Length: 353
DNA sequence: TATCCACCGGAATTTATGGAAG
DNA sequence: CTTCCATAAATTCCGGTGGATA
Image (tube, rainbow, N blue to C red; front, side, top):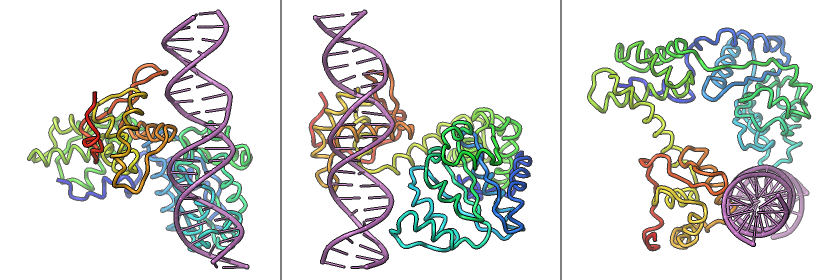
């Protein structure tokens, strides 16, 4: 049923950004100087997950690129070190620095390589305000940044070193879409990626309403509904397909999340999956008894308790595991029993008591 | 109520690894 | 070949927290 799968990819850029006209104008104004060869203003875009902060920045930058000579870079900053960020920018302007240059050497290298106005999108920049990366980039003429974060004030409050620079930035806060607005957006995706007439306006509005205006979720739900309809042999999307689309979309994300994690996480997940739920003490005990067998034919070795806590936290962040019960001694439970572990490290290590 | 204990999670430190320059 | 710089993962250290116990 899906005629163009790319339309539903997370990083797909639509030809038009519906209902963000004002924001686009604001951004273009902030970058007006680039047409004179100067650096643009600094920009901060804030708002909740999945409302199109990144898409807005990329889309507007693309438009700007059609009429001005600029370079741009898109850096995902989550967990990135200052050197990693500077390196990514270097790469975007076509000047790879030596593989292990000192951080300051990379900055010098970058300053020499930037030949025209350059705009750097610092995506997932919530942890960035304290980072030396900002100061280093501030020292490069013709370079300006777009900071993307969830909470504008929280970010500014922590930006001590570069506060002056960013306090004067163009600040944009995006909210969740209204039901009608998001339905428009979903309609555009449907026209681009689905056959005519397989979904109606009422269904789009229902999706938009259920996901509470979060575009990313809405788009994935629409895709899931189309896939379910195809599996069930429907010639168009039925309401039962919409019913099940949300769980299907979440399920897919969870499976992908689990697959993306390293082996240690899989061991912990498999242990939890075996029982469905465990308290912290039993979980650690179980890990200890099972560890040798689980890691036997693996180049990795079992990890200590502190590290297990971090893995567990990651599993929780990925919505694979939840903590329930009192804060003190909570129970860890598998969120989705249909997400199967990829390993069974426990078979040969005896059964549970 | 005061004290104790086990776990949580932030921060600093250690360890392993790898590329590049001298 | 050795040294320098960097990253990533894991461990150590430690203060905070909340339930249990005397």
